[in-house]
Image: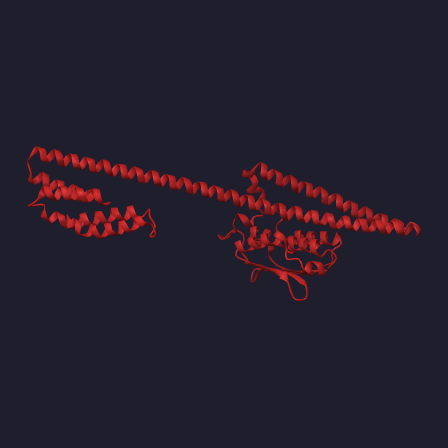
Length: 368
């Protein structure tokens, strides 16, 4: 009986202390209760000569410390076996009932606290998920709209330049005027197409805000945002048609096996790098290197010289690269960017190679 009583007191104290951290002042009380629990069971050794005193002493211990009522129950059985007085029996039963009610009250209080903690954790998790979704939508809006609008601005500038040339050539040959008129028409067609694309992207972002329950589906990787030969060629072609000088070094293999979410992050990195170059160095040549191999992962390097004004701007990288770097890091990759001593701005990103269907997946922040 003594080892069982000691064991039950220790178990009850351990469960009661589990709700508190080691820095909580009440934790010291539970440590002291643990030390008291060890000799408490020895009280039962005196049950033969002093059964009533042992019973009431056990009740006092159970009330004062977070002990299990097994100690008092054992003491009560000894008391009932050694005392035939009806009054003693009634008092013992009353005390046991009181201890039972106390245990139920403690259990109800603990359950209420556990429910409150679970509810608070659920609320915090919901807030965190909402914040992650909002961050993902904001990143998607930046990536898509900034890219399209920067193309629009670049094409509009080219159209303005062609218009100025046409004005100076009104006295030239008819063929030259027709050639420049065709060039202006092509630039206008590009602007119209890009404006329509930017409008569609804006509608998509608005739909995400109106229907957040469907946003995760819309943020999922698609054929338009996956890293494929077709999407990469389209990005480069759009940049060149907008007047950018892009020199490329492309070495990609088995892209169909690359995890879709990682492919989207890689695509967005290239897109943001070209957009950043158009914003801060529209007339400078851009060097783009993309290596995607199962043996070494995905490596993206984009560089372009900066103008004298841009070299002195501390915020020339913008918030887009900060967001891209965060998504790359969340996927287990690395990203560094900045200007060197020669005034050339570099973006260097590396992503691991994870096959489709693998267990490791980037979090929701990487979807955008």
